[in-house]
Length: 257
Image (cartoon, rainbow, N blue to C red):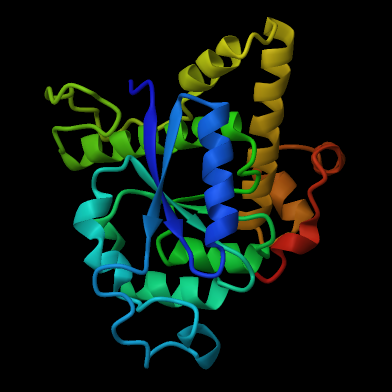
């Protein structure tokens, strides 16, 4: 498994200084993630801004920018796309115009996007979200899990070069009846490396699982707590207690089906 991941961070116009400060801080705090700024204002950008909304035409590059940069972006393991309320319209249009099959997995970095908008971005091809991008250790774990899932998907599709393997040897075929699972091994190694005790590491891992499971159950059921509890095979009161424990509100997932 890769010890260090290379991440291309898209320098969204009007936010370059803030993004560069984030990159500098992240690179100082860890040697296991290398963050590289990727300018969007080079090589053919902006060239045709007539298709952009008026509020985006002055600040943002042409919607073909990622397609133009696709070969350059192949050098990274993942692509980090900062998203804010101000850049959301442009981000949606950018993803609509970009064949994401040309790119490495795209992960959105955000702290302020509504769940409905997140669902929209997922439908447009975003592979995952990082809601606490300043927590570099958690970000790396999420990236490892995502890349492991991508590796499993490639194995299902018959690819011969998994994402996380350094050596380009052919990987064993995985039976199609096998369901991919969370990469708990990578998470545990990270927690051990951070010098957490067994009890604390277990508590953190269980908490992350609970929050992710409850969130996804509510997402699938459009915020209906009774339905989410039923499909989770949990008593509604126990399901509600987990929501309260992790500060999850059902209202965030209403009208998302």
